Image 1 (cartoon, one colour):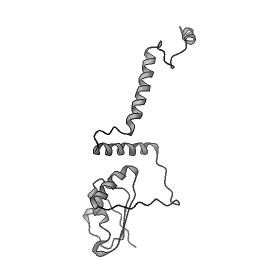
Image 2 (cartoon, rainbow, N blue to C red):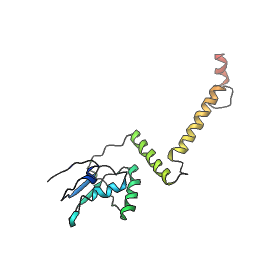
Image 3 (cartoon, rainbow, N blue to C red):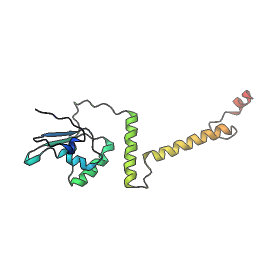
Image 4 (cartoon, one colour):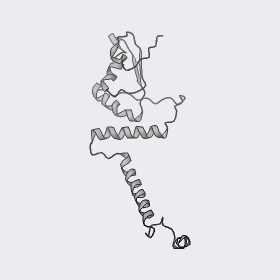
Length: 152
């Protein structure tokens, strides 16, 4: 068995015959590159398999690829016996931001998943700052009159 590990350059730059499998560890952002990558399999009436690993933030590009090739790409779950590292918080946040950005490209009026939470957090922060500046306000965060008298 022969194995070739290559970068994106190989998707267009070389001609290799008898490729049985192409494994994509990421979904190309330039969707035409996907067609060239998987085109390495099944040349001259040969059969071949293309496997692409996909994160939630890459599903957008998979949908674009499906429209381009006019086919549905079948989805298979990773077998339970395969260990998959849990995605860290920061990486999940990056993926969510990427998804928002993609949705914003398609719909300029899209506010984003972070919009409502950000607005709520801004209100809480604003109220806390206001309470600091005005200790006599009727906010639940202000000190009781008894403790206020002790300090002054």
